Amino acid sequence: MEEQAATTEMKRQPGAVLMIQGTASDVGKSLVAAAIGRIMTRDGFRTAPFKSQNMALNSYVTADGKEIGRAQGMQAEAFGIAATTDMNPILLKPSGEMSAQIVVHGVPHAALSAREYREKFLPEARDTVMDALGRLRAAYDVVVMEGAGSPAEINLKARDIVNMNLAGWADAPVLLVADIDRGGVFAFLVGTLELLEPHERARVKGFIINKFRGDLSLLQPGLDWLEQRTGIPVLGVLPFLPRLRIEAEDSVVLEGTPGRRTEQGKELDIAVIRYPRISNFTDFDPLEDEPDTAVRYVDTAGELGTPDAIILPGTKNTAADLEFLREQGFTAAIAGALEQGTRQLAGICGGYQMLGLKLYDPHAVESAEPGVLDGLGYLPLSTTFRQQKTTVRTSGVLAQDHPLPLGSPARDTAAALSIEGYEIHMGTTVNHEPSSVRSLFELKGPGENPQPEGWGTPEGRVWGTYLHGLFHNDGLRRAWLDGLRLSKGLAPLTQTFSAAALREQEFDKLADAVRANLDMAAVYEIMGIAQKGR
Image (cartoon, rainbow, N blue to C red):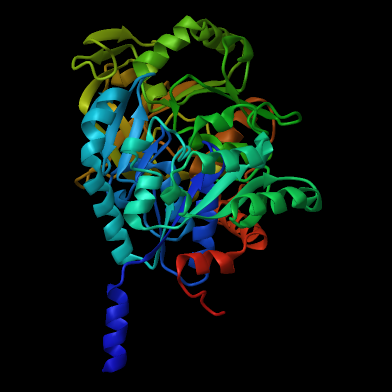
């Protein structure tokens, strides 16, 4: 009985916390947090991710149809658990240079300017953040918390809810990550410390130097100096891991990253138009991993050329990015490519809306004032933007008479027929000429009758869908690519890989690299928990 009582008492204790902060944005905080959490999960700890406030256009839909930052969705998958909105209670989705949609616990809360957010929303946000963290700590052994940007942003510190203020509220030890690949790593680390208050500096228990390539012995004198200068240990120097196939959250990774531009020798050329507000570009990650496919993210009309397929991806603001296409000459470039041999034009979510005839915005959801925009006119559809957002995970099958030109024999396999995906959009789309286009999918609806989704021209040259994650369906992805191959006179490959299995493999690759180069015993000691099995 005493042992049972002791066990019950242990379960009542809140889970331990560890916070990963960085010297700047894009230094690798999300992946370091994912790796450490994956290691702790494999060590037998029930582990959850947490980021109080995230800013991203590349979002993730939870099983209950709520929207959170993709990084926390990815981390939950790495930890082997279902993502919830407690893992990212506040999500900011920029809609302009100075404004954003504020998503609270997965549901749009308000559209605010930067000043309105800081002055009206942040003073009331602490309870939302701490309640969510409290629920996670009650349910898990460990919560790996992630900061945002840098904790040394002087102008933001007073109302901070995501870096050092949060670390203080949660009484969390902090590991500070710096990116050596961008240069100035010692200045970043020492400079960050110098700009912290003494009580904030005391929370930093260790440094992690990320993205190192080279001879570690040549770096050692600098590490020794850093530890002597600051009194804080360097817990690990993590290697640069090129071509790590883990979904990224920020579109900055599309800029000059290996594998994001044309690869020589690939038989299929897929061009994804990168407009300023591109979202959920991870839709196309599995295409990049196919052996015969090159994916190009195209910034200018002059780069487009005549690819085998052009994809208009998702966007946070369809109206603004449609105007971008027109201003930059993409409309003429797309039309020219189709005339010169491009085989397919596809739209996903916002890109799907652009392919229609009209876009109506009666409530000024996407524009400064209510109005109507002309679409690109490739499909007989119109979209009306609504104030209520659709966020849902869904599944279904290819429609019986779908127009997608799929390759044989994968066309007829069960794997190609079954699909899963998710929707995130503010509009509803209506088909004005059902006889001139064909439905792509039949999705499970609220009743027994399947619901048609997506439309394409009868020969499948132009098509669009609201479904994100379409190309994560292995059979359909390969069948679609083989359809492109057949149209070029190439034999289909038919064989493909499992996107889900590849993701697990990459999580393990990341965790193994970090465990080999990070003092996990010291990390556990910093957290005040015993390392299991040691």
